[in-house]
Amino acid sequence: MKVLWLFAHPDHRSLSGALKTEGLRTLDAHGHRHEVSDLYAMKWNPIVDADDYAHDPDDRLRIGDASERAYTEGRLSPDIRAEQEKLAWADTLVVQFPLWWYGMPALLKGWFDRVFVKGFAFGLTDPVTGRPRRYGDGKLAGKRAMVVVTAGARATTLGPRGVNGDLNDLLFPLQHGTLWYTGMSVVPPLLIPGADRATGEDYERAATRLRERLRTLPTTEPLPFRHQNTGDYDDELLLQPHLATAHQGPAAHYTAPPTPAHAEPS
Image (cartoon, helix red, strand yellow):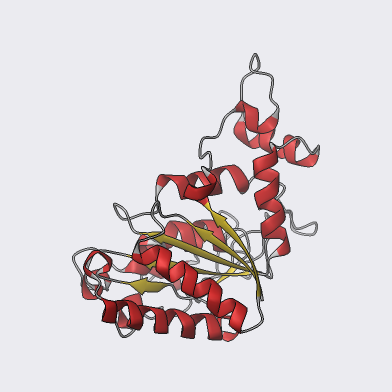
């Protein structure tokens, strides 16, 4: 594999930091190559503005148009281009972060906001049907992705009956709306629960699970998201009525129920 490890935690002495180190060591041990984007260490700028696109500040900034033009004309800011080059090189993306307020840290959200511009991450159109190519058929098709998330909560609270909601539902905007949208195959996430109370034994169990998930990452079955352009959705991109009867919300957009992330041994 050629892996881009995207990491967002402010302290390398944390459980997250230790797991990142172990993960990179595991990739090396199995002969895989990797690049790292450690966003806090890089002091990554998460804010989208006109400077990203060499845009005239006197003109109204329409983000979609300006970013696409800047990408096409080679005028994106150097920090964005550098991250796009890493992702273009990689065949696998590992996204690692702590779960803060049911989502990713703002710094990481800003990475996707600035790097995943039209033309680079999306924007293809089927020449026959005229339909946009996305949700399994986008610019980044052929790559796979895995989310590694640490959480202070207990594992069961992030399952289907847990008070915090199922982890796959919490990650739906990232796994389905960002990674799958751009064409990446997304394997089930790795949840490391109880992160703020972890003991040495807890770390060893978490490291063992991470090593195994990385070892099997090339062959792991991805989450069974529905493709946009294979008949499950109509021309208005609504799920076909006969498919929408059994489930509502995120569950409707899987062809089969995903395995709950908390079902892995903790």
